[in-house]
Length: 474
Image (cartoon, rainbow, N blue to C red; front, side):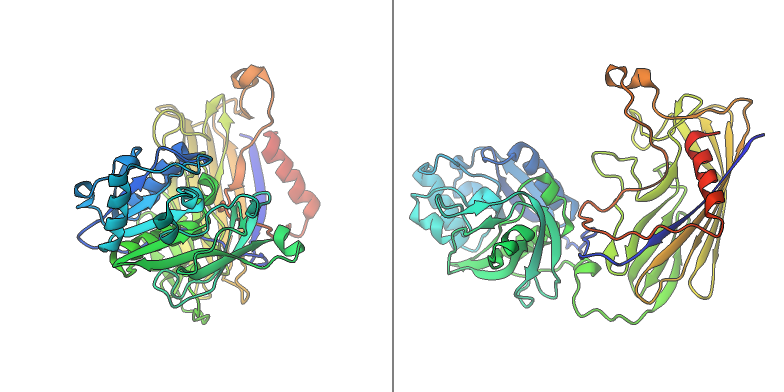
């Protein structure tokens, strides 16, 4: 049998410039809040953002959602069972467009009578000739004065941490399009502002970005954030839209802030272990620092989440590549069988990564050692490769750094074991696009401007030779 050995040291460090958002979660009562999303027209990509907005709301467990692509047909009777309207609709550039009078009256009466109204990004850029709409909206695009630069890293600062939507919430970064000099409605309270390097370099102050207002008995929430799906994937945006929608509907917020957004945290460490039949995790108080997942439906072991200091740096099974599992190891092709991607079946690959045994050793200093014996085989086929994996995780350092030391030993079981990239004949046009496999990290999508420390053990030359063996399967 041929043996391949690989030793890798990973350092998760807190030398970042941002507070990285993680996944929002909140409690839900027995009764779901009824949301109506206005859609069907927008100079932004509403055909993608509306389904994603619906996914954000329903995924929280707080809301039930209906969508209309004909908001100009709103009626008073049709809104009786609605708690809050969330608009992803505008008429731009047809700025003079008005709805039929019954629809306009229905919207205004709904809010005045106690209904909630939520707008974001471009959905306030409508009805420039409807005076009442100007009373229930803010931050709209004004020709000849409003402008934006390139999309990029945008810092959001909470200006009012006493309002229910932003109470106790820290700022965050988002990759978004920042509007400058948008219309301001003085009846709206500014809860947060935003800036980026482009406007800072020009000496322009933070722009109002998060707003709340009352209208009759109703409540209105707005944010200029949310240009596209990428921006809406940001957990800071999700947190604001979820909390803003709940507040607009009910006047209160019951959701718990993701701990990375919580201000005035107790920094004293209260470390403890938590284990189930599929997870092993280190906690500080009630908050996860890291979690190892194994024997799950995802088909391979992985770390997620991983917090470096107060920054969640991993992303788990995103829509574009659901086989990206936080921080994980996987081969691509073994003997022409694909072990990397899920093919046709949810969380199922043609190649199986099977854990035969796992030993987890927690230590009193809150370091840990994880040992796995793994075999690789095609679905329903014989084993072709075996692996012994040892992962040593350091205790969290004083500054929040975490060290993970990996050792891999592979033994060929089959007479011939070929570790390979995607076969060229399966690539578009037969063009080679390079290869990928091995130890991987899918970063939190809002991961911006990180500092990495790359470190090898004592014999760097030896380690690099083993790394080459792993890459080329020699």
